[in-house]
Length: 259
Ligand SMILES: NC(=O)c1ccc[n+]([C@@H]2O[C@H](COP(=O)([O-])OP(=O)(O)OC[C@H]3O[C@@H](n4cnc5c(N)ncnc54)[C@H](O)[C@@H]3O)[C@@H](O)[C@H]2O)c1
Image (cartoon, helix red, strand yellow):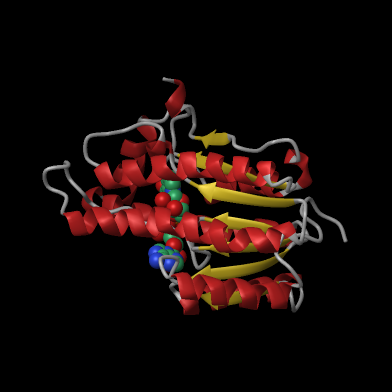
């Protein structure tokens, strides 16, 4: 088996589209078996079929999973563990953003929804996933936060708070695993604007070209990012190339946080 993650068995949430789908494709191309989990079960299944057609049957498996639901997490991890022959990598990627407005406009229900999908997901994934990673060391957990978890703006109180929680929770998980003597690492990735459907509300507001140009002007490198550019960062953290990296945050933001 060749490839940067050859022999790894990687469970990825939110893999029906966007960054999750790009990460699943990159991992499969580099020799891993992948479990694609999503609330959009049909979308995850289509992606898995495409990966199996490209890389051979048994490369990819799909699971219906609402990442806010503990019972579904337990069932999906158990099923993926059986199908993949273990789990050595977990990517907590599923997440949402919403048009929130300022903190005085955002409803408590809206705030709780963001916290639930973006943070409960990481808590539940790690809580129930570590035991599988412990049996398949070295293990790696990659949590997709955001540059908005490190830098605030005035219109995203729930998104800012949820992604900041993911940032520090990742470090907590890293220290917990280290303290237990496990070779299981935990790191977070912090993307800026990346070309996925999550940007559609902005595209719908301004039109595709203008929206992307507007967002790109905020980035020192002058453009929004590509899903493959986040997948490359995840691949590094999932591979043994990063064996001594844990509790770290990897900003993939075209330089925004340098300003
Ligand atoms: N694209 C960006 O600009 C960007 C920037 C920074 C961070 N992120 C983060 O990256 C992650 C992926 O975002 P994306 O851009 O690919 O978004 P996306 O909207 O294209 O994809 C998100 C995926 O998550 C799934 N999902 C949503 N709620 C779910 C739930 N409750 N249970 C299971 N799956 C669920 C969706 O069905 C979808 O397949 C998110 O956590 C997002 O916050 C994205």
